[in-house]
Length: 294
Image 1 (cartoon, one colour):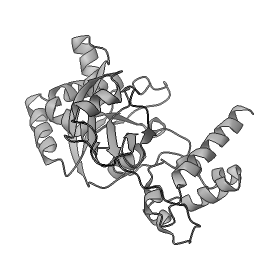
Image 2 (cartoon, helix red, strand yellow):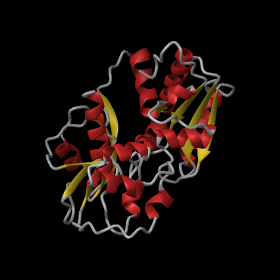
Image 3 (cartoon, one colour):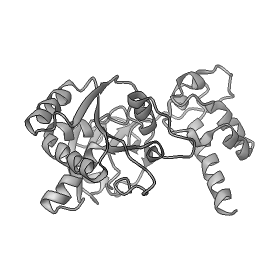
Image 4 (cartoon, one colour):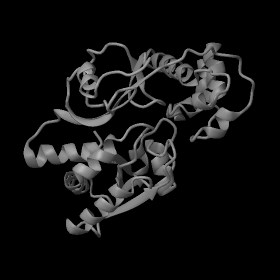
């Protein structure tokens, strides 16, 4: 879809996202180091398709080896005048699409809109590699790099066939250690818990995080304002939780809940342990249902 924008949408900027979307995940870092040539080759195809004015490669500044490696490849592959590498502060959620656009370009995606509405397309390094594989090698998307980390004996980044059970990945990494009782697909902030080890790896599986979770009890909001201070979208997350609890979903919409990227920083910072993201998802789901029934 990103490579075939509507005819009335002029794409002037392409950003290749080399920032890890969450803590613990190092899959994209590994892809840039191991498949840098393919990543840049895929990016050149994206540039040819969209004909943007500018192409940026965003990489967190704690990945110095990846920055150095891609800078060398940009020169050796003849892309010096086409691609510009932008080191960014290693601060969550730098890798979030809207945050990335704001940091690099100073543009804001409209509420309920998409990056292409402001002339921007953001692609992941794994997607760029997959495009190269499809065009130059005739290879469909049958595998991806997955970070397996947390309470496993030997954390690794693995090149995994789609459909491989989670059990196989964990066993390959030496099995579960300690009192781990939760498996998260994705990172600790935005990942989804799974308890079926037979669940397969999909194209969106960037990480398998094994961890011990200690149950905590939700308390009443103390109006400390921490969730407001950490929100990268400058929203009021505490109000989403309050309105959702009361069933006031229209009030959530008026508070710009559609601009929430569900990064989880609010819930992480909350001393009352309120699952703000879950309440936000409930409200968004209800609003979507109401919109569909109109």
